[in-house]
Structures are given as structure tokens and as C-alpha cells.
Length: 111
Length: 115
Image (cartoon, rainbow over all chains, first blue to last red; front, side, top):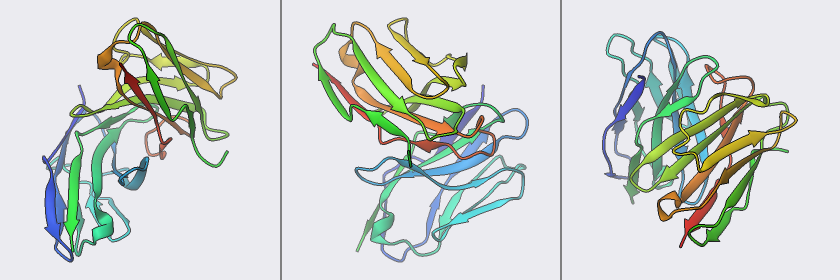
């Protein structure tokens, strides 16, 4: 069945460091890919998405590119802030179907 | 409403009791999902509704779990004879039609503790 694998956390960075959180997937067909974020004490919210190969999703300085050849959707940010500290979830879905999530990666950014 | 609304936000119950968790999706969203978030378990899919029918209930962990949706809107997740391993945050989400490229919006969750 379909699945999503993320790098394990926690990831601890200093402010202004470069961030990469790896995400790879296994799926039939051509799923849509998502990054969701959960800030401390808050609900899950969509960060960015890409619906077809080579699409780049971007939001709040974060980017991820849908790479079909490597079945990856790595999340990147050039300069993280303390306010980016959260748990990040990679996910995929097919039309009309459910979201399948990775295990989540906790990010902690220190001043 | 403006977002997905869930109630109660927190529930402490004794082992063996039944609990009901309610979800009010975003108005106009036909698709509704229930997930469970446990420590160390990530986000676990439970059930998906399209309108009032559930084409995918493959994630319900046992026959103690059931869910229904009425009027294409509010959904109730019922856990009978609760066990300690049922302790988790139960998340409801909705989207316009099914997922695919459509954004799924999550509620803040119902935190269930079984003692």
C-alpha cells in the first residue's frame, strides 16, 4: 500500500540555519503531496502542496518540489526562525481518497 | 462555521465507559475524515465519509469504534467500552469533495484520556 517516510527527529537548529526535512513516498499512480505543520498547542494546518511532478509548493519561506524520479518531496527553508519550531508532517493523497501521513519530524529552533 | 469544530476538546473517562466525539465540518465540505494521533504513533487514519456514506472505514481499529454522519454535515465518532490504549487525540478534518489536490482542513482535536 501507499506510504510516506520522513527523516526522524527531533531536528535542532540555530536561528538562520538552513533546513531540510527529507520525505519519500511509495504510491501507485500520481498522488498529490503535502506538508502539514503542527505548532505547539495548535491544530494541524496545511503548509504547502504540489499536485503533479516537478511542481514546487511554497509558503512562508518553505519550499518543496515534487520529484517523481526519486519519489521525494523534501521540505526546505533557507533561514529558520524560532517561530518555525513545530512538528512537520509529509503526506500524500489520491483523488477522492484519504491523506496518508509520515510519522512527523519535530523541529526545534534555538535563538 | 469558519473552521472544523470538535467537541469536547478534552475528555477523561473511566475504562469500560462509552464516549462520543463530535465533529462539525466546514460548511459545504462533503468529505469528512477522522484521524487518531497518539504519542509515538503519528497520525492514524480511521474513517472517511463522502456525504453520509463511508467508502473507507479501513482504519477503525476494532468493532468498539464506529462513526456516523448525518445530513452530510455533523459526524460522531463513538468508542464503546473504552480501553487505556484508546487514549489519544482524535482529529476530524474536512475538504471540498475528496482529497486529491483539495486542501484538507483539520480541527483542533478531542483529547481523550482513559483512566
